[in-house]
Amino acid sequence: MSAPVLEVKGVTKAFGERQVLRGIDLTVGEHEAVALIGASGSGKSTLLRCIDLLEEIDDGDVFLDGEVITDPAVSPVAVRRRLGFVFQAYNLFPHMTALQNVMIGERHAHGARKAEAEERGRALMARFGLAGREDDRPDNLSGGQQQRVAIARAFAGKPRALLLDEVTSALDPELVGEVLAAVRDLKQAGMTMVIATHEMSFAREVADQVAFLHAGRILELGPPERVLEHPEREETRRFLGRLLAAGRI
Image: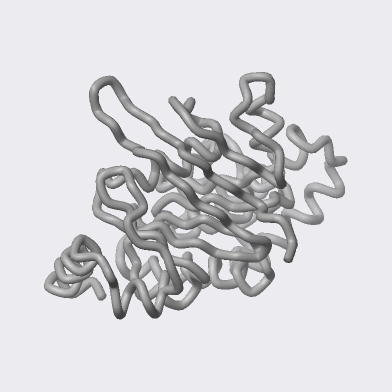
């Protein structure tokens, strides 16, 4: 069995007096997709940000391909070259075209030649249904198109793993499907992913493991058919019950 791509061991994080992560343990294998579910404030986004070293952890360690990346001697910039992060709010550069946004990581972080980065960027835009929109600036794209540009940009650097933080939460309902289709494509391509999501049907379809977070802890972890259909913890049942009552499952 191959070594895990990502390992989180005993990670804690507080903001002032507010304890957000309380000893998180999580292992993500090669080509595996893990969905993080839980109510707002449960720690999903903070966990992703800690893995990407966007937040400094208080205790514990994060490993990438067996290397401790939370060691202060490790360069966060070097780590982020090996991970792709897709944010809720796209975070595209508004003064650049869609293609330039996709190319920027390969050009500046990985030193690719312009022609090489452009060829790959155009291929990725076509792959995610954006052919013909290469010269558009973000303001001229729909929310779903902007998020697909963001996914293409994160994927362009050939990351070891992708971290996706509620990538559909800022979208109108009719645009959600096109973004989820892009993530399904990544899954089929064997991309290792950690996905924070409120879309339970999507988690059931794409994830190999579902982790339910509650008050900064992973209370339940297992295959989606077990966690989502036969949860063992009362907290998980209450969370899924609220979603069911709201018509979100």
